[in-house]
Figure 1 (cartoon, rainbow, N blue to C red):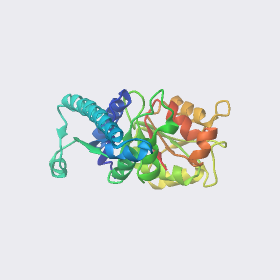
Figure 2 (figure 1 turned 30 degrees about the vertical axis):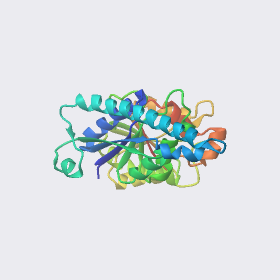
Figure 3 (figure 1 turned 180 degrees about the vertical axis):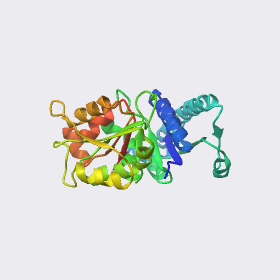
Figure 4 (figure 1 turned 90 degrees about the horizontal axis):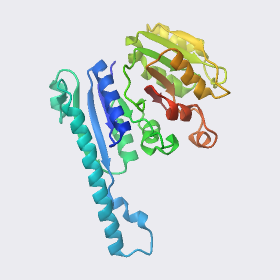
Length: 292
């Protein structure tokens, strides 16, 4: 098994550039096709939000302004893509499935369509082996990243969250977070291709992180059945913060990829009280492979 098709939701930000670079690094490992998708705001979606009391002319003006802003943003995103693609002499630009299938090595394509970003990205991700999404912006709380959460909750696919800055390597030293949940089991299964080709692997667990489900011994047996050598290490939360402890343990291992389940508690509870997923999303500086 390999990650042959990667989807990258593109935004015209520094985080988007890091996601592109992270996706390219992953694609070089697997010889993948990268499809970059930009979702423009559909001006028709503005009208229902305008509310009562506005004249038809005012609504039309709002729609026109939305269309202009959306077009300008789409132009910036396409310029970002063109600049990125222009510096890749060994990558084939493939705007059709036939071209991508015939090409050797990594291929790259771009598409811009109108719609609601969270809906379009989540639905399109179902046709890819993995979505590579930008890290939440430094000034943007991860809880408000609709597209990211839509992919996690609604795509049924693993999601690779890029770090704020492009990593030097990916998937050579892997940490897997285990807490016995269905989400962590899905993440472990999704990570198997990475685990088979890694140089070093470590399963991280903690009493404070464990939920109802198999203990670490069970998942270590699972990995042995798949021919994946790994060690298990118990980590300690930092000042009772499990997320910080998990990231600290990954740093101690010099990991360049962390895999974990996302939101084993409800998202509402995590929004109110915080949680491991939220902390990792907001504070990670390495790629994170998540499954929900």
